[in-house]
Length: 436
Ligand code: ARG
Image 1 (cartoon, rainbow, N blue to C red):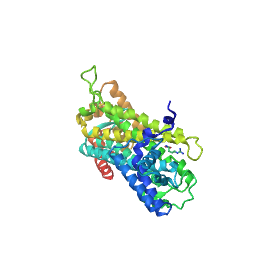
Image 2 (image 1 turned 135 degrees about the vertical axis):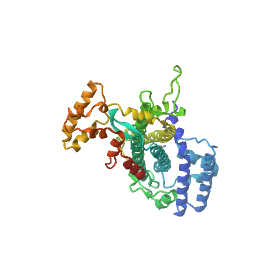
Image 3 (image 1 turned 30 degrees about the vertical axis):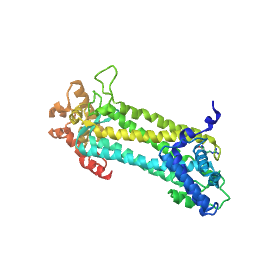
Image 4 (image 1 turned 60 degrees about the horizontal axis):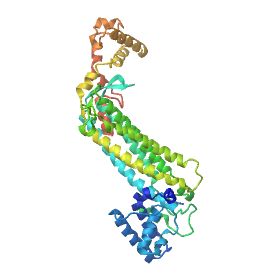
């Protein structure tokens, strides 16, 4: 084992090079402004850093060293000589690493938020297009009550909206400028931290230098938010898998989102949706990995914290991918509304409506529930549906039944009746769409 490799993070933190350079440029300019280094030196350093940034963006540099901070300083020294070392006045890698992680995460959070907006735009379009399609709503995956497909789908849009709000909060926790706390105790140099914050687009600066270099809460917060978002995407994917099965046939996935089998020629497996679910494990794992690394660390900086990067990068890349795949999968799938409607015929899906009908005739709900469950059992025994029962059949269960009971057995009416705020009636769903 190469011992240097064991402590090195250069294998994965090079992707933060751009942020490290921007941070160093802001810091160097501040040092000159506060007369800690000369304007002449500052100009040379900034110019040198600019040339490294350019080469990095064109993929012309391979950084070497213990980590990205030392690698860039080494490269700068190669280009402008010893004055490169002045750049590290009044700072430490301890505050430098938090700075670049915060800069990186702020950008990535904004990217993920845009992707969530895109998913929700697609779900909203899907809901508008299939606004009045009726499907059986489920509890325990068993037919329960009729519901609008649009209503069912919009439930996910609300989850994703909350995920977005959590990301906005996470952005706020991340948007705090750490540089200038140095190793952990602050510095004797007359630095201007607010200048650096303004230069780098942070809205505030951290208050306690020990906390600043010890804190990885903002990353943990992000990892949790990403894990929860993946949980929502995973439920969404599972729903799509079930619905596209031969047994359900509610939807058809685009060929782009299915794969064949090496032995069964007929197969169109929902592998994309399955992989979205499968990726959830690593997102939970990344959260647990950093929580475990941080647990029990004494203040302030400890090298254990270098283990924050790989989980962070992996969660960022994974969540971006699965949000995108979900969006594309929904935008290309087809709905079989006939199948959904005919599935409503099973499982006495209007039993609650019949019970509510009795309630409207003055019977307490509990009693109504008991009466209708007797009717259900009768139908099961005689292999009948509610529609097969005559008025006199109904009357055997309660004399409150008359021929108005058939109106309670209408799917469309059952939907329209559920006008309570947030319910599945057409107008309530339209209102929801507007609110989203
Ligand atoms: N590569 C280190 C990390 O990712 C940077 C900070 C190193 N600080 C130190 N005192 N060794 O955490």
